[in-house]
Each structure stands twice: as C-alpha cells, then as structure tokens.
Image (tube, rainbow, N blue to C red; front, side, top):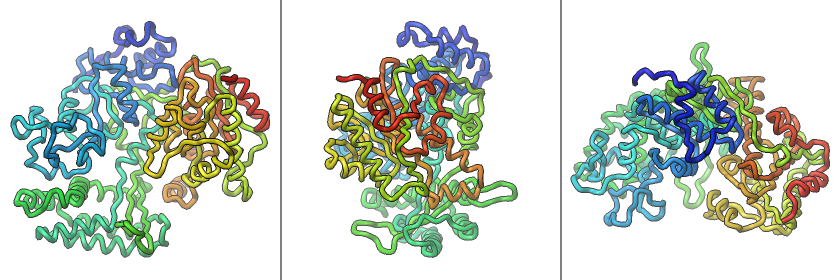
Length: 611
C-alpha cells in the first residue's frame, strides 16, 4: 500500500458526481471539508442529504491519487444494487448465496451470472466448494480463467477475481468482512461504510455460529466411512456437548459455564484441521464419497475445517482472562423430543460480541463512516470501534413536513408496568388508527417487536375491518413489502427486525407509521444476561442507545426526501423517556407530546391532508 497524499477540498470537489447533482449541496460541501481536514471522519446526516455521493467522491478522489483497493460497503444487497445503478462504473460484489453453482448442473445454458434460488439446483453457499478441487468451473484468482479450458466460469469466483483487480467496489458488509479478514484480499486503501451504526451487529452475526448434534453425527458417520481418525474426536465432542446441554433447562437458552467451555475447547484443540481436510479431499478424489448425496455433510465439515481455529478462539474469548472480561458468549438449548420433520435436538451457539478488534482490521487509512443515526458518540464508538471525529449535519427537510406523536393516554408497555389487557388494547388501537387514515386515502406501516405481537395484529385485523399485509406461510418479509408497495392492502405489518431499517416507503406509499414499543431485551435472553454480567449498571446506557437508534430509523422509513410528508405514532409511554432527547434540533420542532391519541390522529390528518 502506497503512502497516500493529502486529500484537499479542490481534489474532492473535482471528483464529485455532477451527473447526479448539478451542484454540491451545502451539507455535502461541509462533509467534504471535514474529510479534507481529518481524512477519516464519521458523518451523521439525515436521509436524503446525498451521503452516498459523498462516499463516492472520497473514493474517486483517492483513486485519482493512485490507490487501487477502494470499497463502499453497506448492510443491504438491495442498496448495493441501487449504488451500482447510480454509479455504473463501480464494480459490484455479492455473497455466495446470490450465485449458482455449476458443478452439479448438467445443463448450464440457462444459468446466468446471478440466478435466483429455485431456478438453480444449488447456490454457491450450499456446496462444499473448497473440497471440489477438480471442479472444471473453478476460477483461478491469479488469471481469471476456468480450471478447465473453455468451461463455464463460476460467477462467484469470477466476481471475486474482478474485485481483486482494483477500482471502486461496492459490496455488502458481510462480503467485505469475510474477504478481508479470512480471504487473500489486499488491505483497503479507501473505505466508505454506509449505515455505520450497523457494522458491529453485522460482524457479530457473521462471526457467530451454531453447532448441532445432527450435523456432528452426520459428519462422524461420513468420517468413519472413509476411516478418518478425526471421527473419534468429533464423536467425543458431540457426546460431551449433549451431556452439558442436557444439564440446562429444556427450551431455555442458557449460558454455558467456564469449565464446560474449557472442556469443549480442549477436545477441538486435539483435532488436526489440515489432516482432516486432506482426508476429505482424498475421499472425494477416490470416489469414496458421493459429492451430491453427502453435499450437506461435506459442506458442514468444510466449514468446521475452515473455521476450526476460529471456533477454538471463540471459546477462548468466552472466558474471563486476567483483567480481560469475556469477549464472546456461548449458550445452549434443547428440546425434550424432536417434532415431526425436526432433525436437531441439541444446539450450541457461540456468539461473537466484542467486534472492535475485527473493525480495526477492516478500516482503511482513509475511511468515511456514514449514518443517519449516530446518537451518543461515546456509545457509538464503543459499539463499532469507529472513533473518528463526528460531523453532524442539519437536515434540509422542512420540519413542518413530519410529526412525531407521543400520545398522553396510551399505556406503558414495559413488562413490569403494563396491565393484563394493555398490549392487546394498544395493538387494536394501532389498527383503528390505521383504518381511520385509510378512509382518508393514507396507508400505514405498523411496527412491533416480537413475532407474537405481529401474529396478534394479523389476527385482529379482520375483526377491526382493515386489510393488512404481512409475511409468513412461505411469504418472505421482502415479498410482503414488495406486494404492499405494489398496492396490496391498507397496512403493512412486521417486526422491527424486518422493517425498522432497509425498508423505504417514499412518495406517500405509507405516510403513517405506528410503532408499538421499544425493543428492550428480555431479561432471560443470553445476550442480556451476558451484558448484565459484563457491564452491571452501565448496560442501560447501551440498551437505551440501541432502542434510540432503532426508533430514529423507524421514523425515517416514510420520509425519504424533502417532498415527503409523514407522521409516526410512538405508542408506549416507554418512548417518552428517550425519544425527544435523542432527536436532532431540527426534528425536535416536529415532536408532539401533549395531545391524546385521538387528538394526535386529527393533527396527523391535517398534516397529511386528504387524497
């Protein structure tokens, strides 16, 4: 990596995408000034302020200085596609699950670079790719050519080769994480992190894993079949794992103790990963294993071989060591009996928690972190490991175009505060509010926390005389949102896990949002138990920051531009503790906290007008 020159404001302004914006907006210029001054910065700016253009400008200017490895990463593959449409010259890189595997396909004439699941036998993430060493479609990362001359080239490995070639690459955070932590990619010279507040959660998800009795038993059977000595150790691990899990309450996610973790870690340390990989490869080459019948087991073994060292480290990091508190946590759960069609009875889950070391390895000399919601800078820095100077930009949106309603007469839905019927009454109140707006021609988004709450809303909707759209029974959250956008239903219903972020409802698609309650963790959730032990009283500062960020993200689902008009109803009195204080100054002008629910509905009607 060459020494990077200073990025001055003139160089940045010269790289701005004027094909998208005729002029540089004042907020965009302020952001670029901050980059020129600090090189690496965190920029907090409301939706619609052109943050993506700021990120592209920084990478383009860095590229002009001779840098080659430049990345713009975002949590959502949908956003990756949108950025590619905005800037056709950038390269796009997606995960294995977006690409077909040609190894098992006899007829490849219908395969495209990206084939939707269901149109192909297996996607690239469903196959033991590393073990299929003789696959004719394998693309050399040195030459870009297929293993067999003239063969159809694996599209995933082809895009990976092209991404290594330099230039600006837009990808998901997960793709960037795996390729730069575990792949043979050069360190980035320039990096833009979109939705930076989500980086830690993405890393935690990617670096966590689940071990089941079913998959280990299948792996043991396969290894015994090919006379691999590692079978005995793996079976020892399975028996010990089941023994420990059965000591915990059934169906209760329970943290494992230190001695249990040390015992399991000790067994894994005795497994020779390289020898295991060699045994599997030889068995495939000698046709001792049917690569299709045993595809799933081979895939699980491959993951274990690849991640064995990481598994051991993860167990180690779940232990307290000297002054260092645990960085990961491990929990287990099981069922007394397997249900029909269930294959797994015992599960061991190893969760990555402290993401900062991984973040530090991923950052580039020039890094710009972008987000509409930073909130408490100290908590943001602790969660993400990103501690650059923070530049908070005001909104160019008119405050009069939105309203944040905190009704005075709705209940407090905290478990310890609410009465028996409060939850159901509030859910019905949300549906009645949505129905009242529907009569004026306005559709709504209804956000809850749990799937149980979502199920209740869907069940209550016919009784309240309103048509809602939601997911389940084979319908994905993405498909439900697409159907709603296309005009189906009066209200879209979903949990905050699915619709709090990444869902855009501009141009009056759903100008009204009803948000049931903040999603504080259950006191029995393993994460909550772990954080309570780790942080004691400080945990509330972290939990409040998370629910605050979520609330601000929900509020922004329907106000995506200066012309959008939208309202949100915060239904539980829990919100009153933190919503107003978390709002930027321009948005505090839109807060309404002194009216009843019915009065808020009327005020909202005046804001939105009739259709």
